[in-house]
Structures are given as structure tokens and as C-alpha cells.
Length: 319
Image (cartoon, rainbow, N blue to C red; front, side, top):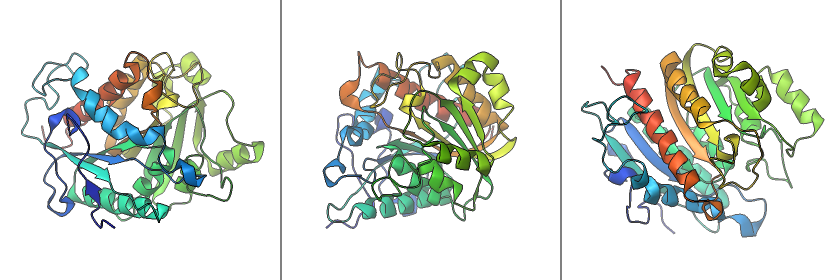
């Protein structure tokens, strides 16, 4: 049984954008750290490894479709990815798992993410299903208080439990609401038919978060949504791929029409990083076998690159 927190991804390319591999998290020296968390908490034993568990390495392998070299000009950013600054991106590999203990993957993910946060690096996590956000949010304990959670998704993910499991992909926002260091929760893009009952929606509303349907967003615009996100940060951003419209993110298990457009996501990322410090983000629920013409992968790479580039331009690591 391996005791290492992370292991090298498969390749080529082995790492996201061919950045250096950094498996020694106690000696991390970088401003941005990529971390794969392949495995969620299964509702059935057979579901430990699913299509989404392939996503971290598939995203890495597709990364050269968007940005072949980090010194290329990017019109989304108005310059190169790191804006010519002496900053480092590393790939910390994938969190390791133990087949005899599914919860060990979460424990290792929490430990790995905690080391990254405490090093001062900004986390970019690649799921896996949405359950993996639970250990990532737990890792913020002692790192920051009153963290605003910004959640892009077609679904609320507020189930207390499903078939007895309380930490699967139907429950990450419910679990987040129980963490004392999480403050406001802003949920954007809700639509269609989900797995919630009305009592869970009532509980989410009683928590006091902002619940913004996709249709409210499309009618009022992203600027109105941004005004409902508390100023100043700190923030954590979790993006379920089905929060975006399936015309641009088709590789999901539960596609729903009417999701966020690319322009809306671009605006959200760039404005949020300027409103306050975004400690990290995760991108989850990509099912690679369902992709069409690499559309999902192209948008995934663009989301990640825009997030890193926006953090740089927001002055997180000096100007």
C-alpha cells in the first residue's frame, strides 16, 4: 500500500502545460499548483473508478490544444499567461488511492491540498466527481476564515445523504455549509431537474446563501450576479462542468440546456479574482468519453488558463 500523497500522472504530456512535476509538497515553491483528485466517494463499490476519474489526466494531455507555450500571447488575458513575471506553475500529480479504504483518498486529498494552501500557492484542482470538493474545502480550515464559496453548477448538491453516503457528489455544498470557516455560499446556474427534494431547497434557503438560477443570470446579466457576491474575499471557486451549457461542455453525465456561456464564465473568473483573493478552484464532473470534437477539453483548458492569468493580473503575487 503506497503512503505517498500524490503520484505522477500518465502522459504524454505528463503534466498540465508541461510544467514541472512537484511531488514533494513539503518543499513546494510555486505560486500555482495543479492537483488531480480522481476518485470521489462512491455510492456503489463498483463506482470507485468512473469516467470522471479519467478527467485529470485527460485534461493534462489535452492542454497543448489551447496553450502550446506559456510565452504565447493570449487574447483572453491581453498578454502571456504569467504576464512576463517571475512566477511558477507546478503540477503536483494525482492524489493516490487505496482500494481497500475509499475514505483514504479523501484524507490524502485534504492533506495534499492543505500543504498547497499553507505554502501560499493558489490551488487548481482537477476532479473527479463533485464529491472531491469536500476534502478540498476541509483543507481550508486554519488557512482562512469566512470564505465565500462560489459554486457554478446545474444542481444544488445539497443532499444530506444518498444510500447512506454523506460525502458523495450529491452533497458537497451541504457539507460545506457545515464548515465553520465557510461563510456565504453563492450558487450560480441552477436549472433543470435535480436529485433534491423541496425540503433540501428549504434548508439551503434557510442557510442564507445566494441561489441564482441560470435563467436569472441570463435575464439580469453577470454584472448583477457579481453584485450579489460579497466583496473582499477570500473566495473558493468550484465549477461543475454541467454548470456550463452543454453546447460548449458536452462531456458531462447530466447535461441540461441553458447553462452558462463562455463569455459569462470568462467575466465571472476575471471579476471574482479582482474582487478579492481566490484561494483556489476546482473543475469537476468531466466525463471524457462523452466529449465531442474536444469541445469540453478546450473549454476546460481555457477556464484553467484564464483563472491563472486572472490571478496574476489581480496582483496576488506582486505587480
